[in-house]
Amino acid sequence: MTELPLLEKHAGAAFTFWRHATEAMKAHGAGGMNWADIEHRTILESISEHGQPASDGADVICQHSPGAVTKARRPACLG
Image 1 (spheres, rainbow, N blue to C red):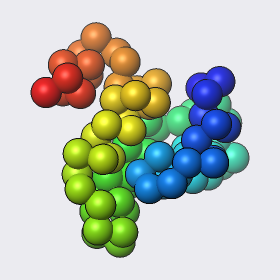
Image 2: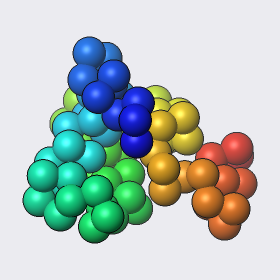
Image 3: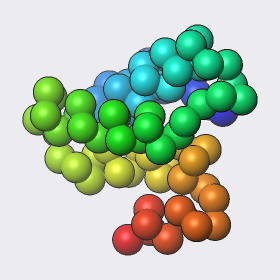
Image 4: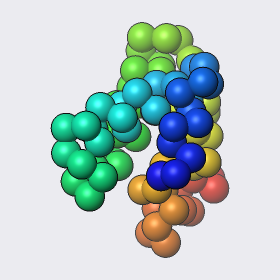
């Protein structure tokens, strides 16, 4: 999560992920973040509102989401 602030200066799905994560952190604190929900909302918004490819959202999540690095979830990111 230390790199999360760096995503603010990015565009596309990275910025969308940053915004959803930042909103969740403000609402629930760092320990109460639901990464699966943040990931879902990022992909949904990136595709439906911004017309970005699903792969863009998936790439951002695999690179930056703490929820994607768990042993159970990592294989889904790697395809």
